[in-house]
Image (cartoon, one colour):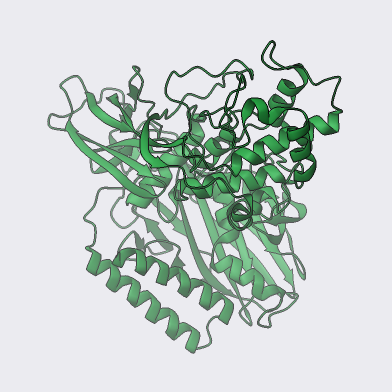
Length: 612
């Protein structure tokens, strides 16, 4: 539940268009400015940003900065965490780039790199860019975040010509003013002054070298060539990255406190709020819950949390239970300034009438790795156009799915029959509530159908479908159907996928597709095996969830009923049982080895998390 809430809050921040933090947690060896401390006039201060979230006050520490920032140590971090989207060389050509709503910036472009301020990039790594679906990497240490920023900055300009920069620094009297150890020796400031270098781009530094700062610093525009000015600017930054100084104390981030308040309202006309309701505030650093507090709701529906830590990168969100449905506020960063953070929540009355439901997106994926069978995976994204939360009705659930004729081996990506799902005469029902709004619920399930080279696939639906997407392996199998549009082969989650799109489907009708062909390969390690691995691991569907802005629903819908949760021991037993079932299925030849190992690793990871 905590992980689901953390992801929910992060994605609600994305949906609300969050901004980046304006103040920076200092890196080792790179002290940041004291709050309100003016910057030296010898290098013009950079323009103020529009960032508004999570400021951090700083105070001196007795610990001396040990070392500087090392771009070489940032390279493996970049390749692991950044290259999937930005590409290994920062050209926006990573394997996951095509899954994003807009291409990531080309950090390897020389213009982008020269105009980048290291502190801004550090801030993006720390707090994320949810508007671009870039997660926060608060799990990395300050040192690692600065190391990966330093490495990213090298992608646009290559290696700094240190020999040339060092000679220019010595020959033009820079050391006489700024000092050999950057400590300042005359009229020039020390480059160790908090924020002096890390808050400036190479363009800022080059401008200061060209124009000077009379009378303390002469202009070098007529004395040095452009190449020499860029080399000198790069050398100054390199010196700052690698500086060690007993005169430059490190700083320690100290969270300031703020106020979070809001209003709980009933969004159903004529609805009211009962006495005794409580609101819970949760704060997450990454996916780890770091803060929790509960207060009672006032008679007018308002609530307030005071003295809440405003920690850089932390996302806060509020929850309230009404009518056995758990409702969420948006997620947001707390700035800690005089303005309280508003986390208001709307609740609704409940109904078992599903007439207001609509299938916003229906994604269907066909996997042919099992001989003479096709495994079908479906993702349903649901909207509720009514003014009440739809809750489960007996023998039907909140939403009912009719399975195609002949379907067997029904399985769910999250939950199971008797837990979240119930069996019906024609398929199954999902018992989780569906709150009003667009794309507020989703579920993923799979089943098997016989396949002999042709399949007349018919997926009935009790609800209107806005649009449907059909995904097939990139080679060997094709689909035809009335209103079905062939979009060709595309990359999704690093997997080549043959993509088809269907238009709207009326309630009570069916999506009808004729599938034909022989998969390219069913041998272990072949093309179909790779497709199976992606299918079982839901990598492709996971990419679709990200695109839809619904990743916070994985591994299960967060806007669910506050039902009794299994204990840690019971959940561990359930996971162990799933691993045993998986082992039996593999031993019986019901799945190939890559798919088996991928799913088993997922279950083991969940078990380790539960045991912790």
